Length: 527
Image (spheres, rainbow, N blue to C red):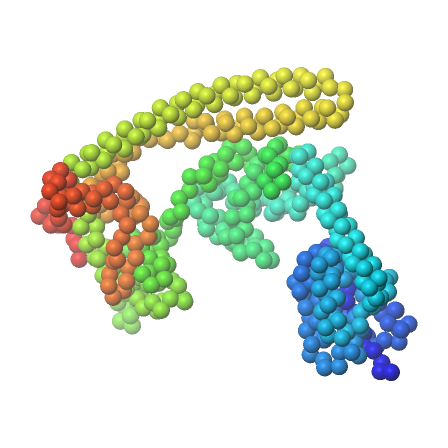
């Protein structure tokens, strides 16, 4: 009889068990002892730190084990050994599939606490035990979720602590989020900087975190900044968890930022624009990182100066996408800007149509204002009613003799308080526009009636305003063809519609022919 070579398989369900519980080492020791008693020669040990649920092929070590067997032709000389049936698989379907994988390879499987029986009765018992293991796993998961949800509802964070906090165990609260330095100061500076526009964008905030070497093992600075902002409520002293329908409530942990900063960040996140302006944009590159994109791949252009040997410098735009065929091909900045000016010059709507459009928009705005006033009146009444309910429930909670009844009253109070806060935040005066609508509308139409002049004579911020107001979405530029047909904003599309109508006999609107320099007065310096 040939000597059997043993392949030991060990598994724990988490990295924590792997690092702290020494479960893998103890499993290996028991399996080696078993192999010694059976006179098996241990050839290799495979170790996984992976949950027992799900596809076994997703476990790295199990995949390596099966691949190792496939590379050896005499697989009938191998036996796979593990210390407990639950290490095999805690999912009935995958348990049976894994057993079939080993049977298909002709490999013997042995377990320290269970003897496999290939009879019909043995297969039935094995299936029952596998189902029992799956049931235990699901029950354990349910109990863990119930406990974690109860902690959330009580105002505690039961998961891994966010950056800036640690979670030591305390006598009064159990595990409690506690500020951890110097991380807490770095996170606080980042969040307060974002709230006060010291860091205008998320990218600026990420750059600060990178400068502080505040980077996770698997998270880049931009992702880290995004995670901090996504959970800004926890830094404001609140607890919530949407997947389990745990509404926002006051937490027991110390806030990292004050409420004013917290609300500033919320308002900034709610109102932020998808089009961002880089802080390092210079006046000589007004079209860099804007809606002007490569016609081949759709990526925004970047730009730089190229210095010649004689010291002569020229500015170029280029595609930033390394996978794009146009990546290495530069576009002279003066050419791109001149063609963009030509594009703007062709947009000359008639004053009459501007006035009609402005009047229609203002009328629509007045209707919306009237509707909003009605909503605010209704919501103010709702807030008053909620405040009355909270007072009544608070009195009942103080009089309650049973802990269960008192907690039920407190739960109802928390739900009402969350609703009240949501309504009050919705009607926060700070969120209302600081500029009167008619004034803002007039400012917009000042740009639309002559975007060319606004762009040529304006500073960098005004140039960006022209791009944002005149064009809807991206504007494609092809190095050989030039600017492709751009989508104009809604009012300018109305002007185009009138142009078509005019050709059919309508004389009340349209877009004027391209304006010449004489119409504009002094020369604008178009290349």
